[in-house]
Each structure stands twice: as C-alpha cells, then as structure tokens.
Length: 164
Image 1 (cartoon, helix red, strand yellow):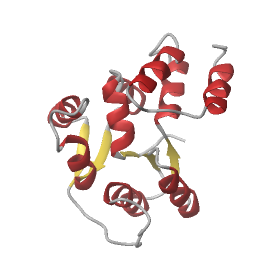
Image 2 (cartoon, helix red, strand yellow):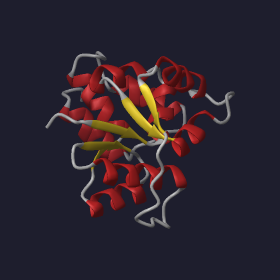
Image 3 (cartoon, one colour):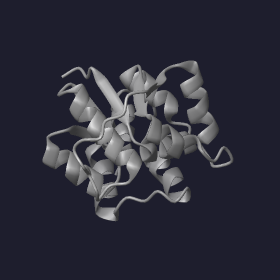
Image 4 (cartoon, one colour):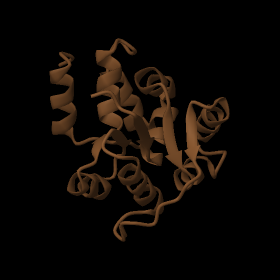
C-alpha cells in the first residue's frame, strides 16, 4: 500500500543521519513528517551527530514539521516524541506509516493498529531498492555509533538479504 504519510520518531532519524542515511528516506518515501516534539528531540543539541543533517532536511522541506498537536490517547509509558508520533498517526489515519525503534513504542503502535518500521527495516528497504550495495557495513557503522540490534536479528536480516 502506498503510504499517504510517513511519520518519524527521533531515533530512526538520528541513527540514519549518523551513518549518512537520510537521503535513503527521501528516496524511499519522498517526504517525512515529524511532530514538534520529535523536531526538538532530534535537533535540540546541534553538536550531536546527525542534528545538523536533520535540521538541514527540515530547512529543505522534505522533512516537514506538523504544527498541530494531539493529546489523545494518553500514552503514559512513552516519551513525548514517541507519544506525539503515535497520536499524529491515529489522527492522520490508516495510510500512515510510523518510523520508530523503541520497543515499548512499537508495542503501543501494534496495539493501536498503526503500521510501523524502524531503522533496521529502512536499511533493508534501502538495500532492496539498490540505494546501498550492502546492509552489513551500515549495521556495523550503526554499532560503532552505539545503535545495536540483537545478534540473532542481525544475522536473520543479513541472511534474508543474502549477505551471510
């Protein structure tokens, strides 16, 4: 199904920005929307890796900041960025895909019937679309940046892509 709206939480944006992967998002999805809360989390500390690239994408207009805020449903187990992204997805409807990594946020998205993928899923899509020659080196760079997947999951992904 073609997605009408792709919403991103801060974690996938930051992770991909740190490995030069923001252009993959633009090629895969054309545009990304984020809430004000996510913008704050992703760009607040300009010295953090990835913040400048995310701010530049916002300035270029392909990452759009949603000005509307939604307060329902209450999602007390999530941080403000994740909660705002899930609330926006509910408000924007079933054509919405949310990019998020946090396990609790993914559980809430599943419970709410919201389509989602995370950083690993985006890397898989980028590999399948021919945007990167191999996923393994990207996962290795992410690990160097402190973003880790479980070994079993990583091996399963690489095997699925024919990389191991």
